[in-house]
Image (cartoon, helix red, strand yellow):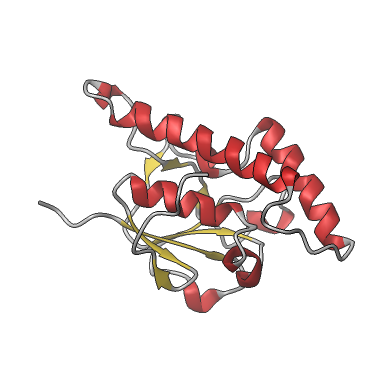
Length: 169
């Protein structure tokens, strides 16, 4: 049986936590500096629709100096909505006969095929949240790491192997 693909998730600024593969964004757009230094982005792990609104509202609160508790209703709603969407995608991709679906998750570049490209071993998925925010459970890369681990990936989260998936909220 082949070894699982290793995926790193880290803060964009914590280069010592980045893996040897391409740097891929899971940040809420638009990110101006995303245009240089990134090999692409992972759309399905990037907050979508109302998740983007929730993320931006929480970010504004954090920028005002508010320390958001992990049981904050807005944070809980964001985490629940985001992880439910990821688990739905992962479940569909794992169904028998779903081989017509691209490997989950995929990343895109400016010139890749429409279905995207499979995440290569050693890829690093980044956002701008500090390691301390992730450690406190207030960052979507932590939630994505749990779903990726549940899906069979070997996950390195902020430099540490994720030995067990995050519990489902």
